[in-house]
Image (cartoon, rainbow, N blue to C red; front, side, top):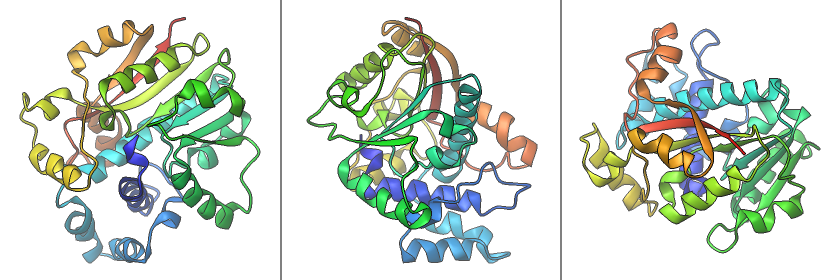
Length: 294
């Protein structure tokens, strides 16, 4: 699960920090932890981005140049996942499992999350960096959070989760953000099967890439630059779903599609009310909310 690597995890933290630096009236969310994961160069870029006039041009010139709307996409998908997680917590979800957690800090900032057991599943190296930052910010890891180290190339979720205290029969909300497009198809299917074995009524939200972007059958703006950028970084996109086939694919894994969202939904639901509908988004990035049918 590659988006938890240092390069992509730090970029996502930067995008969240930039969004969080907006005024309360115009931002989609606030992640007070995101700036803590940035090195001095990115902290400088963040500081400049906050300056009047000049700052408005900084995010595009420094972080958007080689991509197709990544900053806006991270912002809207973060808000979407925040919303569906918050709804699940209000409905009494007992567990939250964040797969490939990276520098995701929902376990420390979403209201009511401390009433659930939160399992952050990730590579030990990424977790070491996260623990270092959280120790400075919080002093100690909150009691409701359990870090589950895993090397996804050599271990399965079935092998590590029970020992961490995960209860398969418990109602669980799974988050899988920025992960599926770095996995081979068999690993995606194994992940879906693990979720499907969760308690009845459990849900999962995951982001995915439109398959047409990867195989070239759909001409998305900025796709070539994006594919070249991730290839140079050694983290190529390897998997995508066809939205038209998503419901059928999930049903084969005993999962029911609740909602499939993309740029049009994000603009109408989140950006237009803030008069930000012109903000660039990656048209090939989507998210799905699914439910375990039992």
